[in-house]
Amino acid sequence: MRIISSEDFGKIIRERRKELGLTQTQLAQLSGVGLRFISELERGKENVRLGYAIKIASNLGIDITAESRG
Image 1 (cartoon, rainbow, N blue to C red):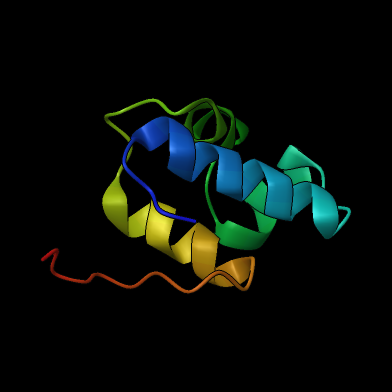
Image 2: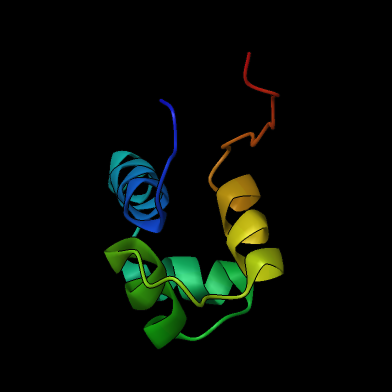
């Protein structure tokens, strides 16, 4: 899926978490962040910390790549 907004990223995180049968609390504990952070990330809040967001994606088995357009 192409990600063009923080909402897109949050949706991917939420869907994968649910696929794995994890609660937000469990993912927060696994990732070493607070529950509020997970909630805000999944809702697409724009000012989350990138390092934590990447760590959470990795913990869920999501690879993030960057490619140049055109």
